[in-house]
Length: 99
Image (spheres, rainbow, N blue to C red):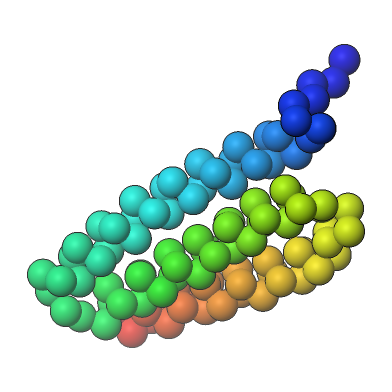
């Protein structure tokens, strides 16, 4: 027995739910990092803002690709998602190394 909702398979529903939860968490982190940056303006906080922003873009693009049609875009999504994740991790490594 498979669950279908609005024409989406169970695995797509689970993936969408996880990404929407990620968007919520990343939005909260972005809010806190921005609030912190306004109080103490240091490069580490800017790096954290960029890191959270890149992962937020990745999660939003994943949701868009899943809603539009994951079968058509699956190769492109993995490629783009991998690039965005690489950039985000490089930012995290740089700010961690420097501070």
